[in-house]
Length: 428
RNA sequence: GGAGGGAUGGGAGAGCGGCUAAAUCCAUCAGACUGUAAAUCUGACGCCCUCAGGGCUACGCAGGUUCGAAUCCUGCUCCCUCCA
Image (cartoon, rainbow, N blue to C red):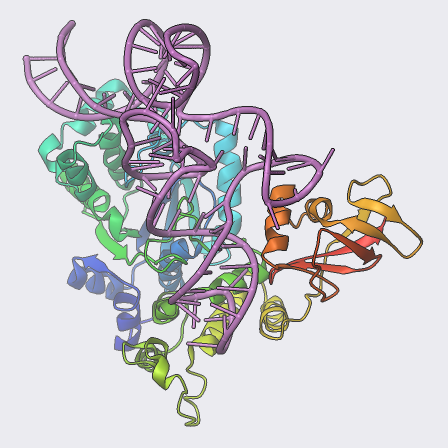
């Protein structure tokens, strides 16, 4: 294993890190030069990875690249408990096939960031499958309810007289036992995982193992700019989003998220990061419309929010798809949104003579009832919505805005609703 | 075992007999503007129709009271809190 220079240590322990417990020991063990056994768990009931997960994966990848080994825990038992970190929602049991399928989906995404050669996936059922009630009692006996009630999330719910399921108390315990089972050296998680990770550390110590180090990573804000990125809040950018969606969602981020995203999701050097922060800071043009013209100093001219977002979008899209796809997505974006031109791939929809959208037709086109045509083209969910869109002047046919519901539509016409919904009408 | 609280539109959350297709906020969509699908402002936001109007469905489920119910009553189902 390579010896570590200070720069590498800083990169590992400073950037994109919330807390390392204890930090000095972590650095010492990194320098020992022996492979560490890194642990990270995942919930197989939600196999969709998004950029919020990538923050942690990138950190793990850095460590893999230094020769450390990751053990990925497939949480097929904890998944049955539900998400203890907030929204209480009863979860149905997953079948073994579901778990396996979800795990495969997960890994497919996972290995876009991680190194498969230094990753080993294990299922919790390897040890919990054999668990007996007395094992459970022994496990629970190490901790007190009072201790668990101090967990931030539980404390808040208890104070607010909101429910805390008994099984949720089991969640940290199971997760902790995973650390014992695999003899983890370091466990990783978001800052909201701190309590669970520490329980693992404590349990290992109680059963006579060397206690794991705990490594927490900052939570990435979602596309709304406020709440953490999560699927249930629908403010996420999925790893498997199409290049176009991924790029587009990044372009729609609030400007003040730009520095965080660069910091946590890219390798831009720290000094460049500082420049970005300075440009986006409270006195930046984005926050002060009066000075929205950026000084045309060479090298700094690229530091306006839109260009930064394009760069961010292109870099990230390239990671999860390909550089070519990323460039194409950027060009598409520029064409459709900046120059208001038409996109490359427009779905063609055949409209036949019996369609209610067709009032009468001839060889070149037809007289259309737009309230029927838009739903038929998948440009509106219902006739009511179609009418609303028409009233709002959102509809264009070959660039013309119709003034009524009845209008002549030639075959091959491009129908556009708003700025991003398109369809081409073909004879059917 | 006992006492109490609740179930409303994609989410949160008002309403507590007619003025309620249901306040407000968020999300969403559109228009304007722009540096972008940012920000801001404006508007829309159940479905259907021969559409400046009309109709149908909707406030956990099933009944009931009433000219009229999301709102009152009864029974169910589900959820939550507290006491023991």
